[in-house]
Amino acid sequence: QVQFVESGGGLVQPGGSLRLSCAASGFTVTTFSMYTMSWYRQAPGKERELVATESSVGGSTNYADALKGRFTISRDNGKNTVYLQMNSLKREDTAIYYCNAHRGRSEYWGQGTQVTVSS
Image (cartoon, rainbow, N blue to C red; front, side, top):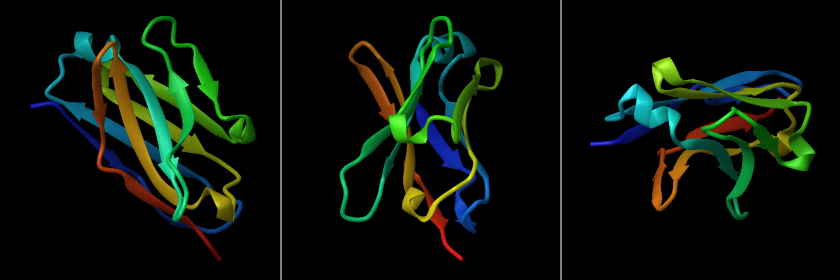
């Protein structure tokens, strides 16, 4: 059974940093590497939005315009894991963060990890 589990969320002060991880199980290393991996987030009362994406081929990345320069997505295919490094966090970054794996018609979501930015 394929499963994605996020971790690394928590409470952080404005200006702080967090590193989220999303580990896949039930995938071979080869299969994981074939999936485009993304991070999404959903703030209270708002729709889920795309944060960042890293493609399966070539490792190209894309970010929401407002997050460029503060967030970095990366992946370690040998560990079946995708990361999201978040720096200079702001209160408006408070949300549940979800990882997403997508390839053709195949798509998986993690259960989400809460990030709260507050003093």
